[in-house]
Image (cartoon, rainbow, N blue to C red; front, side):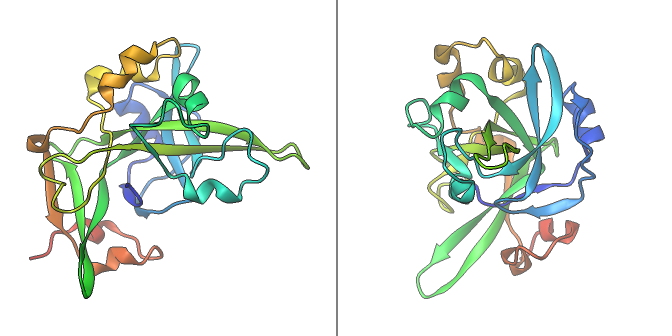
Length: 223
């Protein structure tokens, strides 16, 4: 799964990197984003690419309440096209969640899990394949914009740590993924593991375990 990531870049900087317009004013400087936090994501509306804010944890349109969103932070690539919770978003509402790194924990029997950071070797942001949805509160009609990150099987570098990894999109695939008229057969090949030779995978300190802890030092490698 992908349950924590770093998003230190502001909406303005992300807009430049993704050739988008900033529609949300998010300052960045967040190194320990957790479920239900507000995140920046790239979406496309009628050919206009924008940076918008979403709550992490997708709430399907049909949900009776927003409480279940914290459980839907990830969508499995193998079932995203058919799952009732995600199939509409997969067909019509796809996004890119930029992250400088994501974290995974290697479990040990009888010992504390070890946190690892995974980032691109070239320090460019990871373009995590995501979905978004709009949920309307049945009592107040207030709209809630939420998102989820798609995961797939791990590559060889991540497999010793975890059995899942987020789908990371190559820049050449951004237009296809965000395209509002992209056919499903064009999307399926993108739901693959990212090449391990393009990623840095290293152990970080235990401070990242606490969701209330933040700061660039969370990405520092430890021996």
